[in-house]
Length: 331
Ligand code: P5A
Image 1 (cartoon, rainbow, N blue to C red):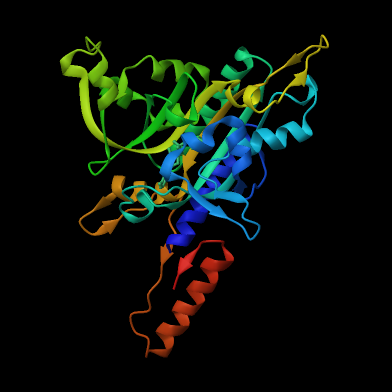
Image 2: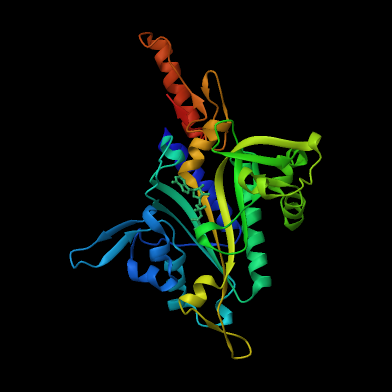
């Protein structure tokens, strides 16, 4: 049942990436250490990276993320401004040797991530690509039946100066959030119809993780409107400009004949974590309440009198009819 739910989450994530104009590919899980030496992250990444050697004693690693690899692939294929803007994504397993793996899929060492990477000629282009992914995220989480709060975030080891995390509100969440109650007024329909103005509306409202909130001198939200809730980070997006294109020697020809390093961003969704996050956000004392869009089955059919021929026939018939009508049924 869990696998069915995971596949449904993955399908919604994929549909919204495609809708935003991103192109799907599939990159390997194992990467070479040399690739990461080019960006300077091989040493910087620390013990979370699972380092391995092959039979020739070459240093390899199990990818925790793919900024370096996508930059290399893009370098092979894109030569001029005509190849941009472009956003590429894959849905692939990652490995991070987390100090404290917790709660199964919520913080696993091996987990499924959707990671997208955008390439633009300039900062203005990057801002548009970032916005397109922001909209895709709002729609994705709304379709999954979730209320996601976008939070301005520090970018950490990925780098850059513009970054947002998307948090699902749940009492068991690992992060403490402080946000303006007006964020809760944004409806599911608003999110499904999201555009640049929805992003402005949301990002103009205050929302911070505890650690960042503590650094703010004076809180701009009046006490009666300030909400404190716990959240689960299900997505994280970054605009980091030329950090990887410059360090890894990726440049493309401009219209005028010059060369520029593309401005890049990366955009992650924790696909397997979402399965746990949905459960945390949507359950009661009887168990999980799957939002309809990800439920493993729509109908549960039980023949309560298996030894009664007529009853068995009726149940079989009903099961056939439901299946013919395309209604997924657990019999
Ligand atoms: C963005 C895409 C990145 O790695 N590089 C490519 C950027 N961002 S991130 O924030 O580090 O991860 C993106 C999302 O992946 C989920 N996630 C995890 N899920 C389960 N177990 C883990 N150990 C784990 N680590 C990260 C989160 O949802 C995160 O937002």
